[in-house]
Length: 222
Image (cartoon, rainbow, N blue to C red; front, side, top):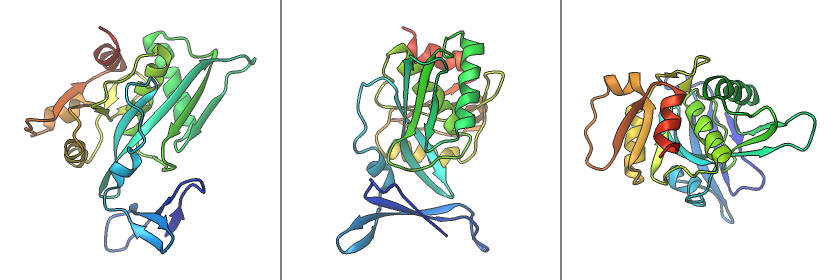
């Protein structure tokens, strides 16, 4: 068991790394109160409570921890550097993965990032290690670079390969149900997941994307 949390935040995460008779990587979310720890029944609403709307560099990711879907905000700040070497800083995510995704965007979209400082943050102090985070990082970076906000009721998830392809991920039904429950209208996912998905909803539109070029065109181009 790992007891995690940012000292500046009021909530803590109890993480089970291995459970002999159940799923691995299960978590429980608790809030620090005067009377002690209190269970958080709706972690997604908690992590998105202070999310800015129509602000560049912010996107919502439907993550899965163990068997629990949690919606989190992925934030990015891309700014021209005044130093000789641009900085790459990631909080709540793998810095090496950030560097890899930055290289993919430069190669496949032709954007200039080598002379920009890049800061990535998973808001709320939670850490996300799953591959589904990749597409959230890509969208947040492009949003900040282009100074164009992501539509506020859009969520994204998917793994990004070195060729710029969007690769399939697991637990898609859990992600969809959680996004729909919180009132989101559009979910961008890997096209391979969309082809296998049996999903009908009157409130949540599901869109399959194959490459980072598809994502950029759908979200940021008129």
